Length: 623
Image (cartoon, rainbow, N blue to C red; front, side):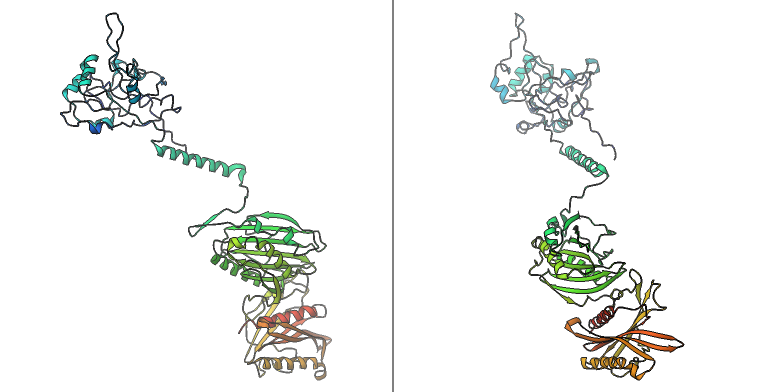
């Protein structure tokens, strides 16, 4: 920090120094009190600066050369300024009435006593009270600051010179008259004596005080910001957006233990941590939601974590973000919902999705599984209430938390802030299973739709969409690439890496067909399913097992029905090829899945059926 400039008042110096009067003359009426302290009754030291000269009476005095009386409060041009004594600075005692012109003592009578002048202040108290410029009797207030006679220098007030007019000769001669003659002349001229009013207000230099205030404020700010090396988090503060102040989201918008009980009523909930700032690289963020550089910045944030003592380690995280306006919140919700939909962080697997009624302006839920040594399920609920976005991440081992329970827990907290953020307040919250939101290329599964076979191992990757080239298992009863019926046929392959237990080149081929109507799709899938089921009768090298049927619901409540099998083909020399296959219809579309598995490495029947339903659901997301 740079040194603060120091402004020191020039004490005991009259205003306008440096302007000299003719030698041998001295203005006895010059003001020498500009550098003196204020009166004892003011209780404050005098401030520096030029004195303010009262000119109320001057407006009525003649200003021309023919004026018969001097201006009140101004000095003749030919008189000397005050002289100063080279002594240490000291503050003489002054009266509450500031004298400006010393009154000469009256002449002594024959007995040696001094007779006051008829108009002396001692004889007319009312006159003294009415005129604050009247000098105290027998005092010379400027004696302390006068120089010795040999070092006299004249000083004039610049303000006096700028306003001074030519004085008559009678006035210039008045300085050489005796005291009685001066007083008589003053009486003849109708003047009661020179009067000078000095403005001693501490606020006459207001800009000085403003600079001091700014410097003090800067010093205090720096000291506080550096205190302890860090600033405590006190919660969000009001922010400005578009010229208006945005009220921050209050801490009461977070869930409490009573709200958390909606997630699991049998658990004993406790609050672990509450923060108002969440770093972008925080490890305890909401699952699947990634905030990159394109994500709008909230004006306030709250996050709270909960835990329980249940055997399944039930826990929850609740985050609330307030944005400057509803439009910004809509943009942020769109970005976060897309991140949640793809949920491509390894090793997540999208288990299910839910939609809500009665939960804000927009809402969605996704249940995922972290397929580690022990599977942990996460149910994430994302909802927007006006300019506020809330997210709940409910965790549990072994079984997932119901999306409806997590939504009800959020609703309890959102009801306390929805009026502030201008959103739709929660009503009676309910949820139902639905197709996961579109992510990646519409019509195709994302890599997180595929489960892992070895716990905590493997990463799925996809190839580009292409024409159908798969040969199938030889049990389909038709050529998949050229069979009549489909108006469109496409293929995409998903490969599994980083799992040493997987067969060489392990992956899944997905084929997607489009028909003119749902009847054509159903007939096509039935033909393939029936052919695979009876393949052992028509092809002696084939063996069919694990036949299963399944159903599901696609986008727009489209019905999904399908069948799955394990096909083993004898390739000779004691070798065999094992395939896990499934076929399903969904409206005017059909899907066919084929994986090259082994006797020890394959999907469970439930995982395989669920993956086929997901592929059919994704197919219904294109028109």
